[in-house]
Length: 300
Image 1 (spheres, rainbow, N blue to C red):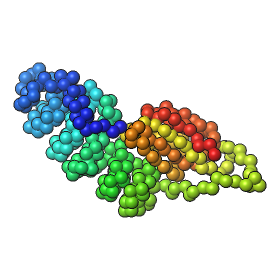
Image 2: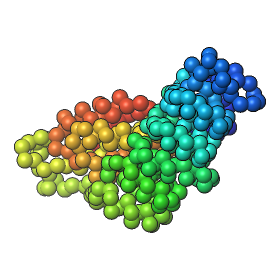
Image 3: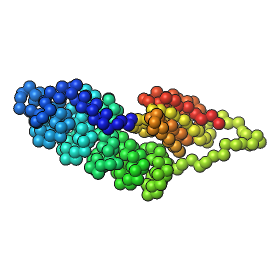
Image 4: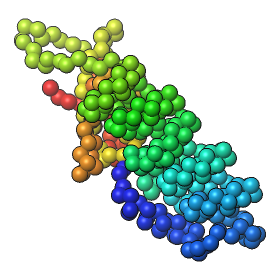
């Protein structure tokens, strides 16, 4: 999901105020001396991180505050440090074991999401993204796609090397890099992505038609195109390819188009199947994924 940065900042501020974190006042450090507030050290840690009060964050962590304490929307102190581009604070939280694989319930975002949000314009946000990728976040595929669009080979390499990304998930970034003309990234991803399906001539003369029984023993696999329409969100392609991987269905090509005005993603995935029932079951599961509007076979 893509969010206007000004609106995002306002909503985050509102969320913090709604939690009672704004009760510390608009100026001055968050107080940590009262026994009553020590018991709420997790909330205070989040408030201090949002205000970028390094001394307070250090003091709270030293007193045993939960580094992964969450707001009512599931955001942690690391979210705010990444959003604000505070590299020193990010390092401090990570040194104390801050979890990178946390998704909030308001934006469905992660710490990596917030760092990538400004990485195109901000060198420090990009450095934070690289730091997070060293921890192998589950949404590293988002950094691959971002880097492919931006022509950032270092970011792509960091995500692929540390993220445990399925090869099929590299096909969409590969297509993005091709469209943007980033040849170094094309070469890098081509060496790691599965071989793409060649263009197929779907016109068939009558004398070449043969009967095929789906799922027969020893039957060779056949390419099938899957069409998926969904409201764009981070991790969408990863979730779809995971469903196919669980079903033992091999993805051999991906084509991705995004309607930025409507926030829609239109995907065409070419897969190899031997059993029509298996692909039907997979399509049913894909159709149940969050934000997916439609998942179906292309009928030729």
